Image (tube, rainbow, N blue to C red; front, side, top):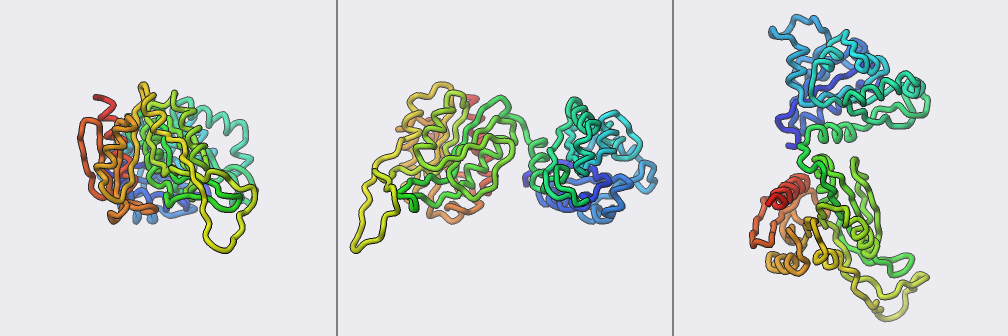
Length: 398
């Protein structure tokens, strides 16, 4: 699991959004994390320690001087044990304390003693959040190395509308994952393509394919979590935008060609996971093509070959292509690897169970110019993304 073996310490303070942290604690456990929770006294007015104890399997600490535990200096032990601390919701009061080194309860004492990455998610009334004092305290936390997760906007518990909402669980989880991921891609600019392209026939219809973009998005997310500067160039998808990446939406193969070639000089690693159309209509009708008797033919012309263009021109770039086949997968993929001067190709067979479009798993084979052919077992697309980046790093180091 993604967070297996990692200890996440949640600091829950006295805001109405404290109840939402039960969902975060549960999600962290499902991802394999060891979860500890410290609550402020005020937080216990909104949700009970028993809730977190049931979800995490650990005693939820509130009182610095609680004697009901094995003998150790608890705040020091938790500070040493934690791989990351998330304070959420973080009230203006606790933000002010942390910014100025005040340690007058179990949570602020533990945060002050900890040396692991520290995340803070402010959640409060808009007026409190935008108060210059609070803003100055937030900047102070950032100066001392805290990562501040931006508050969201919307209707607050006090019925005001504005900034101050606690972000959704998935946002907090992504920040935790990024804090815990190895930063072995730091300093690299990774460009990833994903999803289908659409080639217009007329203002209503288009030629496209069944790609959902899930594999490319997984690679982009994994690269961003591991410290890379990521540009995600994608065709039309139904997926939620990724955090921590530069998002470049395109529609047609020509637009994708222009986007990729436009940033290629600054790219260190290109992962071409998109299903780019090979052909487009030779002409696009200005008005909707009306149905008529008999059959209809649409003349097609080739689209620009992205990898075929940049492959021979690469300098320092590492090029990873994708090859989806329905037969003779290895032979066809090896030919594509050679013709387009790639450093690696990720091949799969659409007919293999679990390897098609729109599913959350993939069954892939890596091919490289030295003749190596390595098949991976059926894995989640997130796990495949990690394996692809591991292979790229190993190959780049040779």
